[in-house]
Amino acid sequence: MKASAGNIASAGLIVLILLALGFVLALTRHDSKDDTCGGIDVEIVEDWHFVEPEDVKGWVETEYGHYLGQKMDSLDLAGIENMLDTKSAVLKSQVWVTEDGILHVSITQREPVVRFQTPEGGFYMDDRSCIFPLQHGYTARVPVIDGYLPLKVREGYKGEVSDPDQKEWADAYFNSVIHPLEKQGVDFWWLDWQQW
Image (cartoon, rainbow, N blue to C red):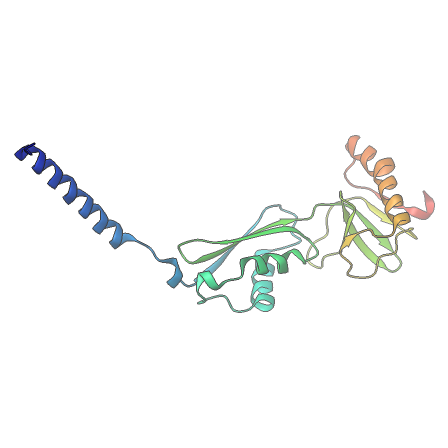
C-alpha cells in the first residue's frame, strides 16, 4: 500500500504540532521542589476575635520555626496543623501551600456558648462541652454563670469535661438552662449560681 503525499504531509504536521506542544510545556513546566516559601496568608473563618492573624503568624514562627525561605516541600504541614490545633480557642486548622510560594493557614475558632466565672477564675465552654480559657484580647458576648460551680477546672485547661459527674452536670445545664434560653432568643444574661 502506497502512502500518498497528503497522508505523509498530515502525519508530518501532526508530529510537528506535538513537538511544538511538548516544547511549550517544557518551557512552562513548574518544578515546585525548588520553590521556597515567600510568605504566609492567614484566614480566620469566624469573627470571634479570639485568634487574630498576627497570633497565628507568631505561633508558626516561634513554635514551628523559621519557614520563610524554606523549600515548600520541606514544610511539615501536618506538624503546623497539629501545633495550631493545641491552641485553646482553635477548633481546627488547615494548612496548605500554593505554587506562588505562600503558606496558607485557615483557622476555625471555637464558638463559646457560655462563660463560667468562679472564685478560682473563668473559662468558656462551647456547645460540645469543650472548655477553653478566657482570652486576653477579646470577651465574647455570651451568658455568664458566676459563683461556686460543680465544675473544677484548672487554669488554662482546654478540652472536654473529663469527670463523669461534672460532664453530666454540664450536659444537664445545657439542656435545661442554656438551650431553652437560646430558643427564646436570649443571647446575653448574667446568672449568679448561688442565687439561682
